Image (cartoon, rainbow, N blue to C red; front, side):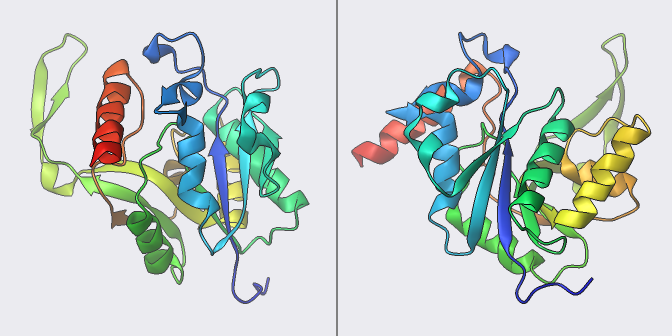
Length: 238
C-alpha cells in the first residue's frame, strides 16, 4: 500500500480503567490536578500540536464522568468504546480511526490517560526521530537504580544488569495497520500484552526506544498524584 504523503499523526488514549490502586471514588484519570482533571491535562499535551490530525479517547460505555468535561465537546476529540483490557480499548480506538479515514500507514501515538506530564520537547523528539522508522517505537528512560529479580518467596534470585534495561513510557508510536495486526494476532492466540510495544515485539518487530524525561510520570498510586500536585503548584507560583 502506498502511504499518503506525508502520513498523518493520530493519538489514541485508552481511558476505561478504574485505577483501583488509587483507592479513590472515581477512575484516576478523573481525579483533580489543580483546577482540572488528570485526563484534561493529558489531552492538552496533544491538542495544540500542529502535526496532530485528531484524538480518540476510549471510554467505558457507562462512564458518567467524561460527558461532564468541557473537552468532551471538542471537535478534534472522538470517543470510542473502552474494552475489558487495554489492548481491547486500543483496538477499538484504531477501528474508530479507520472509520474517520485514517490510513494504514498513518502514525498512531498511544498514550496513557493518567500520564499528564508529557513534555512538548519529548513529544517533538519522538515524532522527529521515528518519522522515518520502519517499525516505530516508544519513549523510555534508562534504569537508574540497581534491579533485583525476586522469587515467589520474596528473596532475591539475582541482580539484573541495569545497563540494558529501560523503563517503558508513553506515547508509543506505530503505524496504524501494523499495530492493529499485531494486537489482533496477540488477542487471537491468547497472548497477554501490557503495552503496544510488547504486541509489536510478539509480532517479530523491534521497536526503537527514544530517551525521554523521567518526570513523564504515570499516576498509579496516591503518592504519584501528590508529587505532581506539588510540582504543579510550584510551577504556578514561580
